[in-house]
Length: 464
Image 1 (tube, one colour):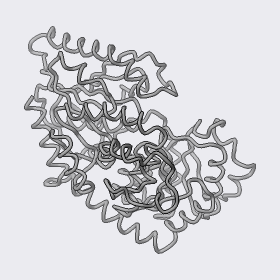
Image 2 (image 1 turned 180 degrees about the vertical axis):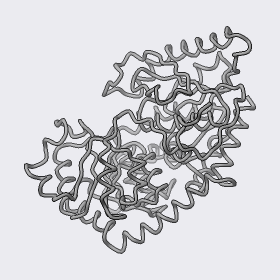
Image 3 (image 1 turned 180 degrees about the horizontal axis):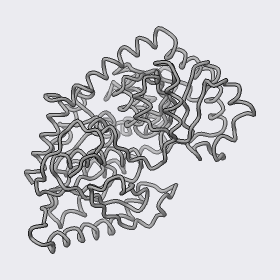
Image 4 (image 1 turned 60 degrees about the vertical axis):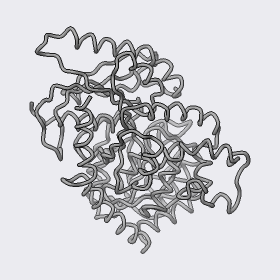
């Protein structure tokens, strides 16, 4: 088969092995991308791939002609907004089970020479009903965790945090900055930002997801031992199943893309005219939003830093605005060419560009990992879910970024940008980022930890 559709791959294509693997991604951009990268990886190892997916945010099938796609109706419009995990999962139980039954029926009724034994299901770790759904099919299930291990460690300890009263009242002053005794890598303010809105309800949801992990036939992580060796030891004690740290997944097929939004090609052409390490890339991911006041603080912080920047403003990401209406009259003209604003950018290509010298990010795991892989230091403006703990690791463990303490404050933004892009501190962070980039690159090479873990994963799937 022509492998041009796979993009630039670090791995040679193996002959077909007669086994089929089913994939079930969760319909968010940050979950779809690593799942499809993993599917590409296992296809290169000889497996036939079937993607089961929701109608909501369905992947672009034309980008993956080498896969079979099996959609089912989840009851949502294709690009619905405002849905929640519990609602989506409840709507998917029966349609998923029916889709699975149809796949097995098709396999059993195919001509004998065309049958491919179904090896296993690889499902996103946010689905909370799969154990019961696959039980009657006697189908091994492997969980893909698209985030890192540190957040799962925190999730495991959440009942303890609740029992000890860490959320009963607002922590103030030095207590917010104190290390959490049960997980001293993170601070009290990190768990308050991650779970503080309704920790008991969040704990109930997470308990169901962690139960799926414990009952699985293995867990795949988009991380590597070089980043989370101590966390791996804790995870293995808590979840006594095989673990495969094979990340960073996006580096196996750098040319592949699963973006749900069209890229603006002007991003790269604008960067091409800039000096090395001179541009700050600004993007807060595919689902975050801000109010108008925060948007204006961001704009003035960028402008007053006097540094060049490429800013992604996703349409609808500023509450109450379609796109840039909130910017003051003449704002862009006053930048005198220092800034370029786009609706969406090819992030991996932007981060790999020589002109990109920093990344102001929301610290979603995909963005964090992509930045570290290119040696680009970060400014961390974290929001919800896994982001506060990711940011803590970026700034305090790997030491490749700067934290914005006040959220969206134009003066702090200006100073943080100058610290990263101009000051000696930024150069020191850039040097550490460069060393981490090399380490992450080596883990994918022959004899590297992720490379070896991929081989172990292939053997594990073939054993079913």
